[in-house]
Image 1 (cartoon, helix red, strand yellow):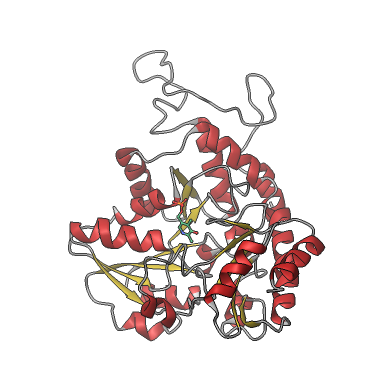
Image 2: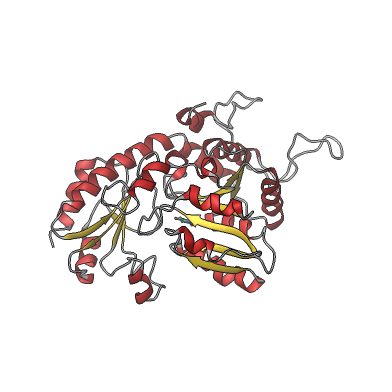
Length: 380
Ligand SMILES: *Cc1c(COP(=O)(O)O)cnc(C)c1O
């Protein structure tokens, strides 16, 4: 099956007992056993639920993996991966990381004796320098938030595997439509399903996908033992969301491209960060590992004027001021005072998160309306 067919058909079957074409919401905690140990494959919904299982199989299929596992949030999925490690183990993570991932690593897992190194992965040598006998996991994320940097997944995986290290990729920004890290060598892929996969800003969920039997066994053991599972209603909503993932992503990319070019030609704008622009510093890597360039765009203003940036984000009407991303509606955000406010100014300035940086999650509305909204907001 090709991708556009998989999103609709993989993992789901008409309900055998009623013929319902849509996977029912199995809103149940437990399952009747005919005799002790004789059941239909489900015993208790923390361990397994038919709606969740349909979604897990669908996600595995669209990400090109054998096994999928869903969790109560993206961070719960990351939590499950790190729980595969032991005290004394070391992790090398990209320094250009989702803030919540940084927080769970440093404030939860460091105190259990796991050591994290945060390095700039645009240069592979920075990873190499930190590898030692204790390194068990390399954790990466691309495109990154909010600078839209592109890390070369295959290069990271080749280096990791020479050293017998597991690689995990947070594929939230790209989605399986744009990028398949497993095919590039990753051992496990993570999604904040909350974003593009759900796609309608109505669910918090996370997922892991792998091809590796041993990793899968560990993931399911931890999913059941720690219990951070998602519910059947949310699983149903995401199954429904994924059926249009290919169409939504296509439009996110088309709108993203037009807006990136509009911004790039605007006199008040200094730099536009969108991996599809030839001027983007990792454009060639993006071209080689992504199918298209997505709808996430960041830009900063000439003169780096904080007050002007604040006026712009408050003046847009269609681009709503909010955290999160990946829904059908367009959102606008101001990283230095919102998502990245907890990072000291010096630190964030170094990575490009300047005072006037603005981030867009370009939705799938009409492109003329979106551009005129930005045009108006930029008349400051
Ligand atoms: C949102 C997000 C997460 C965390 O996912 P939640 O569903 O909010 O727990 C992790 N990584 C990236 C890149 C994200 O955007």
